[in-house]
Length: 117
Image 1 (cartoon, rainbow, N blue to C red):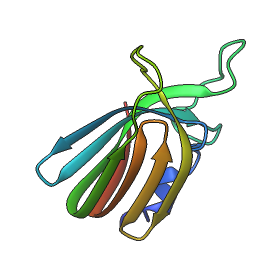
Image 2 (spheres, one colour):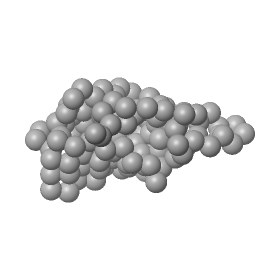
Image 3 (cartoon, rainbow, N blue to C red):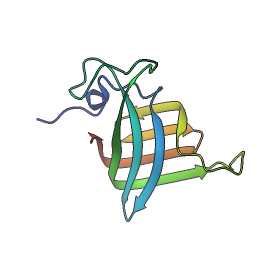
């Protein structure tokens, strides 16, 4: 039996993690992330001096999307921002909601996967 969706986020501090990119393909959405890993995660390494997290690249992959709403925010400055702070994150069953500096993401998907590289 597979892991529950909530358990896939065990030892990943989503509130401290950052969004790097949003990629849309057919009925799939991929969020490229810099995850802040906690000590119990398999990929955890002791943070370097001056860092407050074990930063690790990864992705949130959503497949079989039945509803999708992306509300992109206007950039406050002209320079390209590479990382977007996460303000709110909620997942219940097949529904996913996230508010971040990039914008707001609301969806329902058949499959939600957390992948670390």
